[in-house]
Structure formats: structure tokens, C-alpha cells
Length: 301
Image (tube, rainbow, N blue to C red; front, side, top):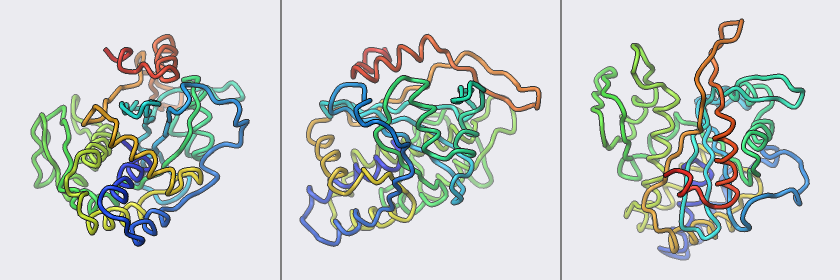
């Protein structure tokens, strides 16, 4: 899943392995920014009470806002049994408040996380509860601390000295950086945003299942690394992270995240030559209803 939820998942180790003050300090050291969420009426929430939607924005740029390379919506159901990740195409054409259309990545570049939240909420008719920004080029050490990450690679590819066969592979930190920095050089090769999404998803999967997180020293190292590579909204404090991850670890029946691709209806090009992805609005409407009713398992079948 994404960075804010990654931090939440790691946080349960504080409870699971020891009551160590330094670990709590590491959690508290994760940067928080109140401006990541828009100002809105808190009574306007929709969905099953207790469920949670987290928007993850991944970028290689430390400028805020910069270019959004990866955007994912993480949904945790109210029973804390299921976690679904909805991939949002960065080139998705969305409608702005003034009625004009633009790509989702440009919404972030011009308006930041808060504007992106509003666009995603409008598209799916949901409420985004939390936001996390992550810098993808800082994930190498985190991946090594977790013992590598699993990736279901859809295409075989060679990048420099690295060969990535098709199918289930496990990447070290250095391999993961090479994997996410690859770009398509021929038809059918893996898009860079998709490779980054796969690595982020693999990190989240490892955080849910890794036995290395039973070691308090590893937990602290992971938290310290996350603190340098992510920013979350001010509502996702240390207490909230612990509560979320404890609920997931105790109740979840799924060892892995369940991935969903946002329904799309083809591609197009603007007069200026910018490519975009069209939304499949009827299916997206049904997807939004499934998010709001905690029925994503049935929707995805």
C-alpha cells in the first residue's frame, strides 16, 4: 500500500514486540502536514463508519507540489479484515471545479495534495480520510531492512545489469530502484508509473507479513527510514497509526493486499499533444459505491 499506511502497518510492531519509548519517538518523528487535506465539513463523510480511505502520492521529486508519478487509493474496511489498493492512472482525465478537464497528475502539480484529494473524491463520490506523500528514490534502504519486496512482474525486461523475468520476483533495494526507474523503450514494455506502483504494493505486502518486524531494532530502523521518506496529514498521528495496524494485524484474513485498477475507457490526446486516459464513468460509479459499502471483494470478482 502506500507510505502513510506503510507507517501505520509498521506501527503495530511497537505493540507486538516491546514497549520501547524510542520506537514511539520514531513514530512521532514522521512528518505531518495539515495542508495535505482540504478544509471541508467533517459531517460530509460517506461510507461505512470505521472504514478508512488513504490517498498515496508517490514522487521522485522533493519539491511540493512536484510531479506525481504514482497515485493509489488504499481502502481498509471497517472490520479491519480487508485491504484493497485502487491504482489511479496519473494521466486520468478529471473534471476541475470550474468545469474544465485536466490530467490527475496536473491537478497535483498545480494544486497539491488537497486539490488531488478533492478530484478523487469527486470522481468516486467517496471521502478521503488521510493522505501520504512518499519519495520513491528513498525506498532502497527500507526494502533491504524488510528483506526485499515481492513483485508480480507482468513483462520480462533487462535494465543495465539487471534482468527482471516475468512472474513473481523478489527485489533488493538496489534492484527495486533499477526496476522503478525503467521506462518503456518498445511497445508492451512496463510503464514507469506501473513499475513504481508494483514496488510500493510489494513494500506494503512485506510490511503485513515480514517476520523481521518482530525485532525491535529492525522496527526502529524501519520507522526511522520512513520518517525521512514520507509525509502524512496531521490526523494520522502515532496513536492512530498504532490503532490501525493493531486492528489489521489481529483481524485481517488477507496476507496480501488486493489490487484493483481503476476502470478506464481508452486513451486520447489533447490538441497540445498530451496523452490522457479516459475514465469508465459507469464502472467507476459502481466502484465508488463498493468502497462506501465495504463490498470491494464482491465488486472485484
